[in-house]
Amino acid sequence: MYAKFIQFISPKGPEIEVISRQIANAHTFFNITNTIIWLPLIPLMVKIVMKLIPDGKQQAAEQPLYQTRFLDTNVLKQPEAAIRLAMLELTRITEYVTEMAGHAKKAFLRGDTDAIGAVDSLEDVVDILQDSITNYLSSLCKTGKLTQGQSQRVAGMIRAASDIERIGDQYTSITNFAKLKREKEYTFTEEAMGELEEGFNHVQEMLRLTIRTLHDSDLETARQVVHQQESVEDLERRLSRKHMERLNLGSCSPENTVAFTDVLHDLECIGEYCSDIAEMLLNEKDSVIKMEKIDQRMNEA
Image 1 (tube, one colour):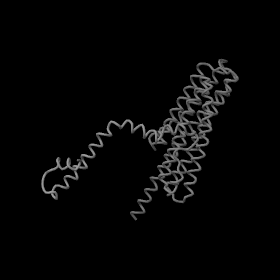
Image 2: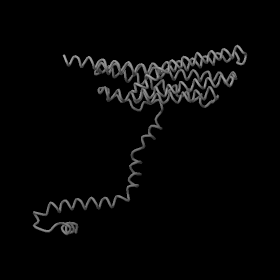
Image 3: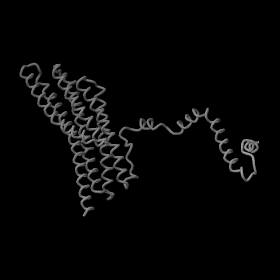
Image 4: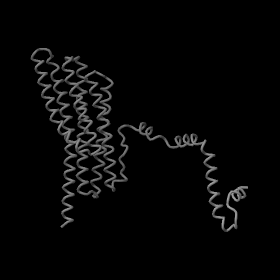
């Protein structure tokens, strides 16, 4: 029946002349028929595939936060691929540190106990991931397959991972002062709390720009981060001076001084680490440019 139908819809003539056309028509009609049959069944097929292949986001959500998601030892002999994977994992750590920043702010300024617990949990995650990235990059160095430029990039990433972990430590320190503030029932003036919030916001913005610098290798943003470090130092000096003025006027309790000044110092340290990461990227790019110029001169010679 099918052969007769194909003959019917194909051109007439000697078989040797029309057989290629009949084969083409047979394939075309077969594909059209299959499409018509399967088209209504597409939603069912999607459900079957989704059942057989779990969603990537769901898998990620089920993994422990401290478990690496991008590092693959199988690509260590392919430096560019390994460096890219390490950078993805490094960017992931910065996301957790950003979460710590928001929680630490709520913990100190709002007395949020849930935020205190969140910072403590994330600190452990950041510490473990930093160790994993450092070990991975160190293993990459041991392969002996890195160019000089790649070696500089890897060294810079190891320093960046360390600085990111230290930023997490500073937010943990702030959270410890939040615990002390809650236990000792320290109260700050509305003016003092407003100044601290200004400090938190300023450093959070600097951290956001640092993450963009790290993720996109954006040199202009890196320069902006380095420049903002001066404003963080100015902010600490200005707010410390204003706190001492309130202390001299008796509008602020002496017991609060340690917590206030130390939190300001923690924020300044975070700014310094952000600046270090940005400077690392700028220095790395300068080194790459110099190496390219040297290579170019050698080739011309």
